[in-house]
Image 1 (cartoon, rainbow, N blue to C red):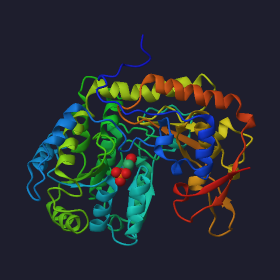
Image 2 (image 1 turned 45 degrees about the horizontal axis):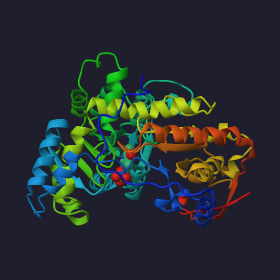
Image 3 (image 1 turned 30 degrees about the horizontal axis):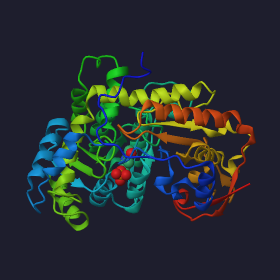
Length: 458
Ligand SMILES: *Cc1c(COP(=O)(O)O)cnc(C)c1O
């Protein structure tokens, strides 16, 4: 019996990777200021920093790239993408953008006025920043279970409908340009939402006359979770489920670097014609002509094919099987993670693994650095390096609830032996965890400091 459903593809092109020696790893991480973001990618053996744009395209996608129509306006590739979007999502209008955040930027520029609120289950950090950049206030109204790491709730990405209604009543509909939801909830551990919840969110927004936009970065993974976990959906195809999900919304933003399995691209789709006119004007200013957005014709072709491939059930079974498998393997070593495993990533509780390292000394950073030293594996700290900040009133440090290290799995890129290698390396680290020491900043910028900070070992 295989541990999870086998890859529904075989490998035709390979990209060699190399395991640097322990001495080379020591030198590389020291030169990077003990910040894995500053490592050279070629010094990494298994790179689980992100699943964004890091997936492997199929030979159908590469063949489509050769058919890219690079006409400035009205390219054939645009119409091919339009057909796919009409078929899968069913929105009336769309524009391509260079990434998800460009779609968020345009939507915020067109709709958000200073002082207005945009509710969601949890905004992803680029969405949060784009709303703030227009003077708006992003608001997160996910269910409380999302904050209980060991709670196995099947739809931990759900929005709290009672909280949403109270919130809308309190701030007033005139202060909300539109409502959102992130599918799956990336900032909350890649957790899905149920169709029942998505329907209730739509009914609530629409009941107050508010337009409803979905951040659809991982729409296919969410649809497959619904098929597996929600009563009444087992017999439906993932595409039917996705289509139902989008039928409740008035528009969507999407990073195509996720569930369109391309290396670059984004989408903004919507039904409102008047808003679409303004979107086009903003797009021309920032991205490009409306039939190519910030992309080349070949990118549109690859996206049109990838949108369908992400919906294939054998692919999704394998993909969700990978996160579940890695999670199960790490559990054999007594390692705690956010439960249940997310669609695209697992989140190790480094605070639980390294209880002797105080939050001020960054247990997540300590584990990330050790993963590199131990096996040239790169993950992403999501803990105090990213989130700890002084309280504006008291000046006292405020620490996040959890010290996490995220291992995101790129699509169709690594095999089970890579996952076993990762599990064994991290398992070995956890067994000698009490010997690990914390870190201190030697340089920390004010904003988004995890990207460029430098550290020294304590
Ligand atoms: C990645 C991501 C974005 C931003 O997309 P980019 O393509 O990186 O700009 C927005 N929302 C979610 C949920 C994401 O995962």
